[in-house]
Image 1: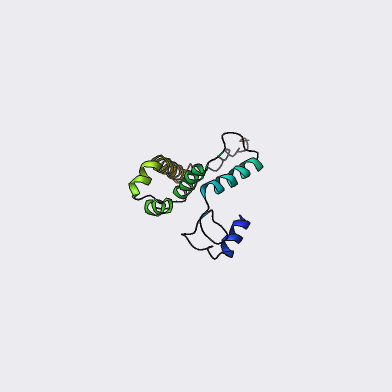
Image 2: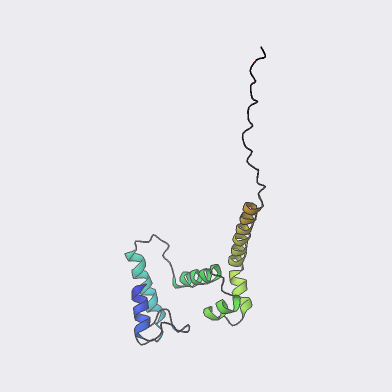
Length: 135
């Protein structure tokens, strides 16, 4: 990650949302075969078992992360380069359903935590005083 930040800073694209993720040192896009070869080398170095990840897998992972981070549909659609937001929604609808379900579970759990009836702690019942026997 540090190397990627250094490279994007070096080419002046660190804070450019339109910059390529995989780019040459001059900032132009890589050919697909070059990016694929780099991904294959990384998978080999990491000793990943088959099936190896593809560039398309990285695209889906990126979209899933954006959804999990609560980015809105239009931002994700533009980031992925879809012409229309409904394309993004159709492809990733299951991600939003999963994210909403998780959010709902969190809300239910918090609600349960705050709505639990509290049972007051009772002080121990004092034992009756024993009076001395009458003479």
